[in-house]
Length: 100
Length: 173
Image 1 (cartoon, rainbow over the protein chains, first blue to last red):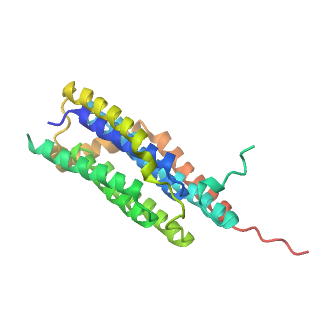
Image 2: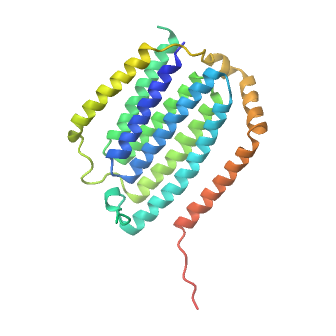
Image 3: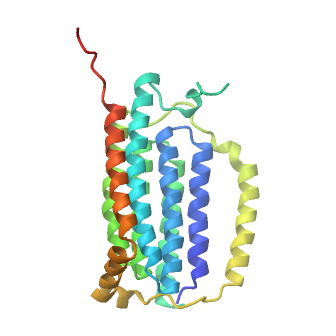
């Protein structure tokens, strides 16, 4: 029997990889993928707890998270395509028009 | 060392390795493919945790729909690689500090690890249609309103994506 702590540790590691990706990469698409990785890490922790507590609420919550992530990706990728059309680049360092 | 633990450790290794591969790849296509592998690994974790429905939803929605959309946009924009991307050589000092912190956190978690409760036996949960029936009962009774709200959210996202990418034609007078 695997203790639930191991799942939490794995979830934390995956989340940390996602945070690192958001912080150090400059390709907007890879930053977006890192966000997906973080959502996934959180889902893993939720399902692990749901399995320990023998409750289906956690699994249903994860189901909603997946649906919301799909919506988020549709809008986010549309935004990235628009940014690429106007700037001809998806380097986040060059998208700084809102900075003072 | 039980078979569960062996499965867990192998899968955890694959999950972390593919996550790092996603982070380090210079080419965005490779990043996306690593992420697909990572999502499928997490789906196998869901099977191990006795959540077959979520595992299948993960594979169809995440590894299928979402990542195909990503690959489509990467190839559409031709944005495989950026010049002057982050230099990983600069990472050794903060990376080393972070590794020490992570090692200590892992040690504390593992040395104090107690089975808080029994995780559902995967073979029982996967092969028993009863869990799926219970899940759908909960979804369509207690959580019916959030379920409907989610469908509206998906509709709004669809309309939003179309509005963002659709070019308004100037009306000729």
